Length: 587
Image 1 (cartoon, rainbow, N blue to C red):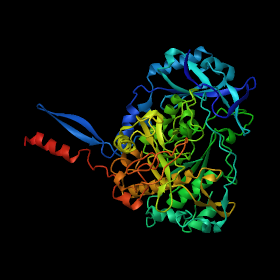
Image 2 (cartoon, rainbow, N blue to C red; image 1 turned 90 degrees about the vertical axis):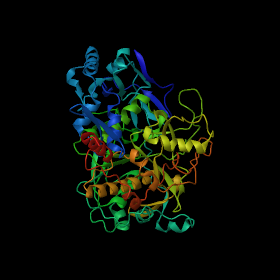
Image 3 (tube, one colour; image 1 turned 135 degrees about the vertical axis):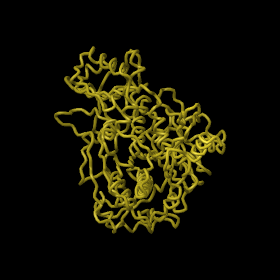
Image 4 (cartoon, one colour; image 1 turned 45 degrees about the vertical axis):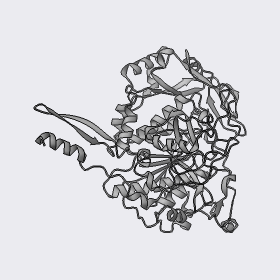
């Protein structure tokens, strides 16, 4: 057995509370590596990049040939096409199933995902899971909470399987539990007077004016949808009185225990602001279980072996029709995610991107890091702490600003991944930042990796409705991260841009980053003041161009309309058509 991942110690504030009961079973998910390693990444970038040509060689007898340039932008893939891209080699599937069978796992307990790249093994006794994975599953509780999870600090696989298996879950991903559902520490409606003249309470009306979307009326709502993870009718009555029926669909995943009468403050804030910006675009709220505080045991599932990403993403990629825009604010320090697990989750986001889904994540609310910022490998080395999933190259990360004359919000997380290499779409922007940064903070971050966030929006002083009262969520002292709201602002703007595209019979924007760092970049509001302190430093500074505090800046809806990509009417570019004419007629 060769170690796949093992923590140096029990992560963070988790503590072991002992072995699970005898007879406890666990459902395992096994991610298999694709036969064509880069096929999905190539496809995602091609269909998402308005400037990405595809070279196609045609032979025209006698004896000449012509290279045509075919643009794939907007030709998003179907569920079946994506499944073919991520499918493992048949030998991989056979080898892993043989390994399971050798350990006494019945084939009837093994199911295969649509693409064949995920195996789900149900009803595995914990004792057998320990033997399979060289693990030691125990029950863990996060300090100060009551919920428990079933995890192991490490696991291993036979050497022959390492080249075939990406990750196994749940194993060593602990994450962070959501804090108990305390109420936001806010003020009644009159609190606006206490703010300085440079601050104003943020409402949908303020945001729609600030980001220039007031006059736009959605026209393609039957084709468009926003998905939000994590209620707001009274809020809409106050701030979007034109909204006739601001309701939304709720989908429960992983036994989340969602109670529509007691929504969490963050979920409340999320839905209030996506609807406040993008109404009447339809909304669906995904209530996701998998963290300790959300788990509700029952006779069928007495222990929590869920986690918040794989269950939800498994549901999403199985759908024939998916929302065009999905936003979520749940994440954590990247170093708390086993790299193999993080890469598997990121690949699932890539699958959605290939199908034309815009996926947005809040960058976080701890600047460049919080606490002592020491690496969790036992070395004691101090390093800036990036957030995952915002560091995944297949998602769009949203940082934070404040004030009407916008500056970077100090809580805006940003920096550089320690898992994912820098994607090509970001190269010029990040190198431009390094030219301005110089040697500052050298050694505290990975200069060759994915930088985040990508964009930003208002993140502080949001007005919301709680318990039928208007409250002002007053800054970073609140018990729930306000940066979630700025994510929903951007999600709402993207949903409106998608609506415009659909109304013109164009494809939706899909995975945003190749477009954002390309033709869209010059039209964003560049933020050049403020920083994101943390780790006993002043953090990175917002500068001209991209920076790891506010990305390329904040959106301007009307300014974006002129920069929206228009796919070519023909698979031939004008250049290729001219070259073809020359070849055919020997001009």
